[in-house]
Image 1 (cartoon, rainbow over the protein chains, first blue to last red):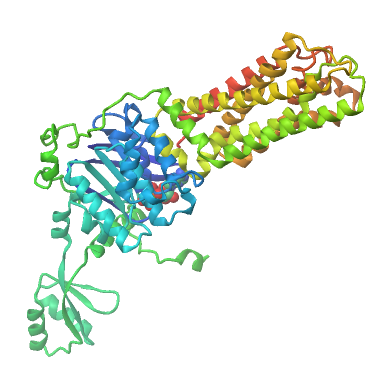
Image 2 (image 1 turned 90 degrees about the horizontal axis):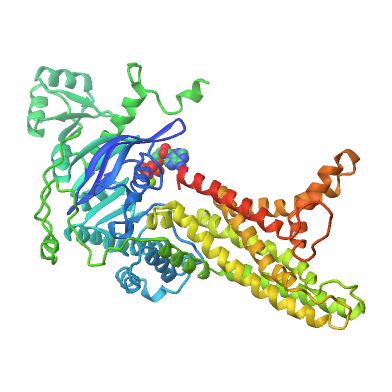
Length: 317
Length: 297
Ligand SMILES: Nc1ncnc2c1ncn2[C@@H]1O[C@H](COP(=O)(O)OP(=O)(O)O)[C@@H](O)[C@H]1O
Ligand SMILES: [Mg+2]
């Protein structure tokens, strides 16, 4: 179990992680989702005691990381930046880690076997492909047979087979009762692996919910309507008590009504429709909406001025 | 948007239930569900030292720097020995051990390089994060690196210095060279080896502070050479005292004190250089430790 309480990290003026409070529980895969630069890696480094929090606290089973007497049997971590000396062999890399935690040498062979690197164990890490490097990192994370596992964007740059392997691995680790905490900037990836979801944007907590609940709340179905008589269509919908949201490309999105009903409504009012379709918002869209709100919230704090377009600054200047 | 976390789903854990001795944690219990069969041990400095020993011997740069060191110390030692014994029938009562100085001075650069690499290279490769995750006690990591490096540098230097010491004594036999006393032997072997190993450990501390291999090596080589070079160009007589001090306390001159007691009347003599280097190294390690504790990895 990992418990964060008001965890905050500043780099100079920049607030990378902003008062995060949540708990990562055992027995499930917890997805840690956020766009690039949201503060996921920074949070994970603070959990591991690598970066010192500016404020707040993070505990592993009630203890600070640097108080763990056998850290590798508590937590195994795959960090974003590859922490491997390119001139050292996979075997020696794992051996020196094992020795620092008095983990028996046979475990080195076991984990090399688990990740399928036995054949290249004596080869230098600099010759490894991206996938092999990722496997070596995972072998290091599994070395102490830890009860908590943390993976920072583990599928980045992997081929489909490697991605599948990592997904299966994470699920089986969680099924054994371990705590599995995995970050990603892809909603689709999380939807496939995570049981629980923690979403952050600009360092702030945006959602802390079970995956099922997230899907239920966010799999919005709506009707898309497009008409050359857009203004009249809006009036008609308005009179029927239906709110429509304008979509960027000239079509309207209608929540909470069936396509049939809107079609009949249009016919009754002799409106020409160019498009009428039922739509299902993807989770990816839901995630983007969630994080976009956080961006907007930041840009406007208090002042209700129109949203700036990208590039406005330099066009005016 | 935030909703309270749901109760722990305890249905999705078949293996966990089957695991021998694994307690079924109640919701909200402070312990994670999985219990490893690997025995729990309280790790200590010894484990960190074993780990650092594996690290230092499993990269080729260690073999290269130490190989070049042996080549320089023994090669240059052998050459000077042969030249002196071949051309100079009268060594003027000098101790033959002093011929080892040149090789060890140049070899010192290798010791500096290896010392810096022991710490700084981990920052370049990102290995330091892996290291600190495995051993969150940062002081222990630094101590283990210092111990392993110091012992390695000391033993290798001692073997080389002793080897060329015997070589020089043998080569200059019958050339009116002085028979080295016990104290001279001690200073010319153990003394100079301790000094070089400390110089390397100082570099290791600087590497940990600078976190950049090339930068730290440049600083250390500058520290060895700059005082001599600066002193060389101090022509003004008003600066004579400064010039004298720069010369006397420069690292090459301090190294020469291990071979001759009275190079200059004032300044360090006897075993002084060793104590000076010991204090400098301890201070640098203290600074490195304080910064390590304070900074993010
Ligand atoms: N060492 C650092 N110094 C300064 N800024 C940093 C540092 N590490 C991260 N940041 C900044 O903090 C923010 C969060 O970064 P990061 O945790 O890497 O995000 P993520 O992993 O979610 O993509 C980014 O804006 C990044 O530029
Ligand atoms: Mg990241």
